Amino acid sequence: MSLRPTQIVADTGHLGLSTKKVQTRYLNEINAELTPGLIHEVNNVLTGIYFNLESCREGIDAANPMAEPLQEIQAGVERIKTVLGRITQIYLNAADREINYHELQVLVSEQIDLLQIIFPKTARISLTATEEPLFLRVSEESFRVGLLALATSLRGLYPQGKIEIPLSIVSPLELVRMNEKEDFADCIGVSFRLPCLALSVSEIDDFHSANLTSDISMANTEAIICATGGRLLFSTGEDLQSTHVTMIFPQYHLNSQH
Image (tube, rainbow, N blue to C red; front, side, top):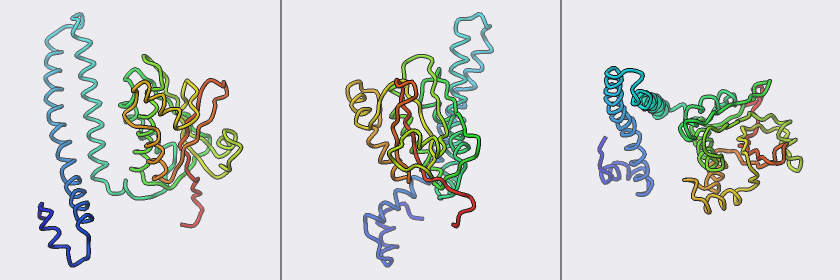
């Protein structure tokens, strides 16, 4: 395959493709080809750092004040290498981009390691599941992007230091309890519990604007989730001092017609 856009245009002109579409396809192809390779190169650098750190640790005893920081850095490198490996598999696995049915709890559980990168390393992320498995139809990649965007938009609302990040799988009945004004009888979701009151997209974005605490606006996050086929719900916690921010999707019944 030629790597020159002009050559691709010439080769595909008889198909009636516009220049913009051809350029977009070209960039997508380049991205698909280069991303795994770049990740591989970064992984090689990290491997070198890892073994150098290991050599340093072997040369000092546990009482040395540098022992604990070196161990933490080495553990951080291991985590990054694990995530990079997973990202490579995501790029190489076309099935991730296909719409299929998934069990919601499993889908969220598989993203916990990526969520851990977004929040401080001292954060403890927990997931509360429902008694019965709940299913949805979605592209795994799109769901992942929406969930990570939501986490990025919300992280500035949590306090500093050792924090709890409680996530919950939400059943249709629980959604109805959260908001009785709308019909969520056949919807499911995953919810972040915030330790503060923030009951709208604009309220969270106003907070971020004032405190410069997020790389992505909640408005953009909402648009990403809507493009995935979901939506956002804000509801007050039972203590009246917390907020549940929930990604909602139509429930998929395994015995339904495809």
